[in-house]
Image (tube, rainbow, N blue to C red; front, side):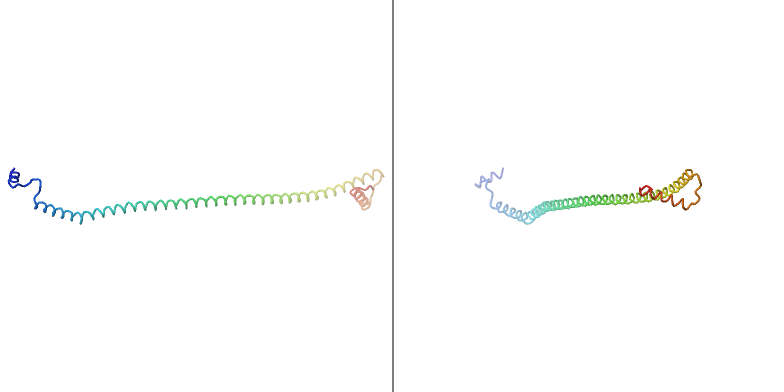
Length: 178
């Protein structure tokens, strides 16, 4: 209370500070402002700049990663389309090859069947000729036997008998009666 009593005696307003106090506060404020402006604000600026660069870099990296992912997706889709095209070509090639193999096997089977038929016809012709020869000799023997029975005597000349039988058989084959 002595301060108030002194202020009343000197006629000084206690709410108004003294000039020395104002100057001291201004000097302290100036030093504090200088320290803040010189050391704290650049630190804040550097932190804000680093943070902004980190965020922008993250956004840029995310955009690059997205672009890379999109490029990889397009490349994958292109490779998948190529693989499908190649698979279709392989299937078509396999179908064509299978068709060619079937045709070759069919041709071989037809050739083999033709050879078998030709061999069978040859065998039939050979057997027919053999049967005709056997029948000629049998018919000749039967004709001679029948002639001997009809005539009642033995026909001795084999050459004449054979010529007669051959002429008879030739007439039978040509379809003309003797």
